[in-house]
Amino acid sequence: MDVNTLGGALEREHRQIDGGIEAYLNSLDGPADPAPLLAALTGLRRHIYLEEQFLFPPLKAAGLMGPIFVMLREHGQLWTSMDAVEQLLADGADPDARRDACTALLSLLDAHNSKEEPIIYTQADAILSAEAGSALQEFLAGGTTPDGWVCSGASR
Image 1 (cartoon, rainbow, N blue to C red):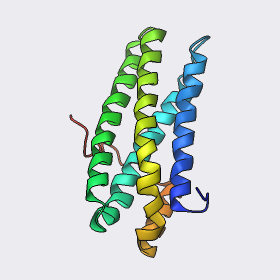
Image 2: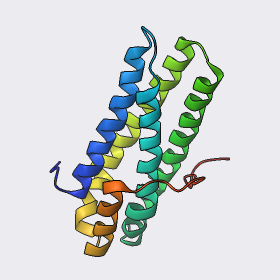
Image 3: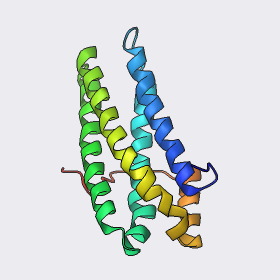
Image 4: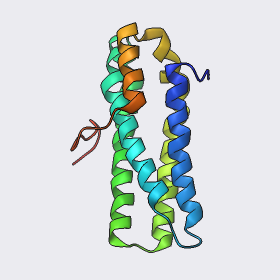
């Protein structure tokens, strides 16, 4: 994917998020450093927010309702998995439980991203208006998830 496209920028975020979780998993063999994991979880929540608020509405309006529905459902699964990982950290769970939860999250991300990148991201630059693309790029450059925001597919 061209790194100068919206899809390229969003894929780059996927790699950064995965990398943070993987760095944490690698640290579990020694004194575990939760910082990369916490940064990855914050990044993933922000990424889901930008997709649901900036990317998905115009794609849905353009007729990609089925794929967007799948993405929203999977966002809910990812959100629940992130909540579980954060709870294990807060509870001081043993490393094997944290490893299993992080590995499960990475598996969900892999399955999700393998659909989202070729189906959704390839359409981003073609379908989004210049205004919508600019708003997404602006958010990518420094936007944050509003306090208390929860993705539409999360069960709370």
